[in-house]
Length: 315
Image (tube, rainbow, N blue to C red; front, side, top):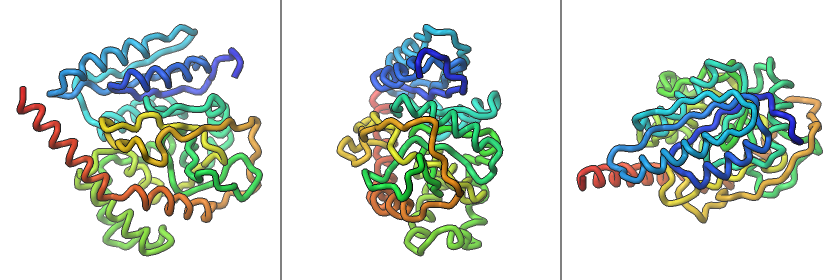
């Protein structure tokens, strides 16, 4: 993007991973954003190494050496994934109308930023569009068109851009879920019974705090408002954070760990119509969602909780 400053505000979500934070921060430095928001969760109780790692992360993100308005939200205490990330995004959209959101393990191809900026402007006032995603989970399958992107009902949050107009409908506590479930409304949104069962299980687990996360709540927001996401026809984001110590991305051999990225050509080739690509969505359901089962997520969260308790007791 040459040396011209990137005008779209960026929210950088960090915690306790200096290695991945540094890698992603270097990508951000290359595009020299004019406005950078940085939100960091606090160190966890009972984890002696957290304070040191969190301090190192703050040192890294403090290395802004270009003309930039930097705004920070550094938590003193640990809020956890669910509250820390959702409240940080709310904080971000209280100050900007639109922007790019990157977590500390989501490494973007440099072309992601121009792609996001162009689409934020194009669909700014289009109520049908809820998010601009950087991740493509087609795993090399050929796109149906020569356009730069397609429309999906799924919202992949590993590197994305969005608007305040959408986030204001977000509810981390999913207060409408029981009404949607009891009314059978997922049957109207999903394509088959298997999908209804899968997502009912996911939303039940999240609402019962069996999965400590913030992003499934955003998908429920999409369902409730019938939003579509924009997905690039090449993958622009690589998740470099898969490890046994991660919050959710814990299997380093996972098919989506460190996926290869490609560049996307700008100006983009825009579709002449806004229709969901059902074929692409079915591929994501088959290859990604079915292989990332609900039981595995719940088991990992239970194991993580047990480890926390044991470490606290040892002190």
